[in-house]
Amino acid sequence: MNQKLLKLVHKENVSPSSDIYCFERSDGSPFEFVGGQYVILNTGNDSEGKPIKRAYSILSSDSKTDSFQICVKRLGTGKASSILPELKLGNELEYSGPWGKFVGDPTWPSPGFSLILATDTGITSLAGLLLSQKFSGRLDSTTAVWFKTKEDDFLSEKELKNLFKGTSNFPNIFQIPSVSDPNRISTVLEILKSILGDCTVPENAFLSGDGNIIREVRSELVRLGTLESRIGMEAFFNTQRNPAPNLSLGV
Ligand SMILES: Cc1cc2nc3c(=O)[nH]c(=O)nc-3n(C[C@H](O)[C@H](O)[C@H](O)COP(=O)(O)OP(=O)(O)OC[C@H]3O[C@@H](n4cnc5c(N)ncnc54)[C@H](O)[C@@H]3O)c2cc1C
Picture 1 (cartoon, rainbow, N blue to C red):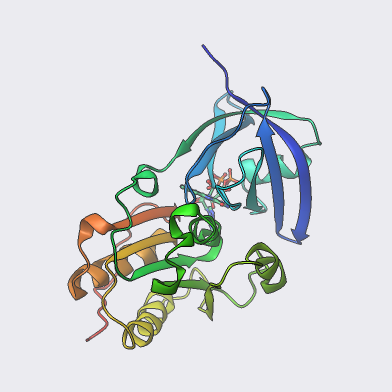
Picture 2: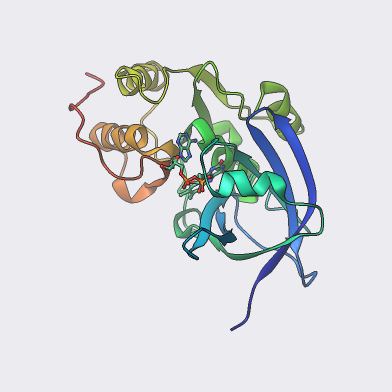
């Protein structure tokens, strides 16, 4: 079997709960990907000998292929997110990818207004898309929105400004209640209503982050008229549908 390896070439602790890692391919060949895609890293085996494989969206622009960046949240009890901060420069990890058929499809986005919406750690795929070559000519018709909790220090505004320097688009940032708060989904839908109130229904959308939120947002967009086939979605957590009350924007 042909093992694919990545080598850690840079690592930066950007907040108490997050680190940015920069990898290049161990064989020195370019890492080609499309903004918004992700890699699956094998961070080692757990106590039962099962490989700990986790997905991470690529934060850096797809115009740079000698190396790429990911940002990982330290979850405290998380398996991979506890192992990764211990990596040393030069360490190698097995990987697969890049993955993400939807963003990789050259026919998406179609012409017209695009909405890129992320919650929490989903900001990584939002950044990857906004910085991508396919969005570079259409930032004027793209609205990017990031929903984060007040206490979340995953990527600071300063870090984001650094990432987006040189681009004409910057995500609109809104604070939302914590993951366990029952008002979280309704808060997002209210904000979404106010954003979409001023513009047309998105022709294209990409949603990432908390699965419980983005599934509701997708339903709303479909209800408003966005074609389901033009909505891409990556649930980073809460990947399974939880029984939740039916919420609506009421527009
Ligand atoms: C397509 C895709 C892209 C992803 N990209 C990123 C990324 O760019 N950065 C990143 O940090 N993570 C990302 N994730 C999440 C990542 O794959 C892991 O789930 C995460 O690092 C936790 O792994 P762990 O082994 O540390 O925790 P585990 O031992 O697997 O368990 C931790 C628990 O926390 C949940 N969890 C994961 N993320 C969060 C969160 N942000 N808030 C609350 N609970 C959470 C998990 O669902 C799980 O139930 C992505 C996931 C997917 C599917």
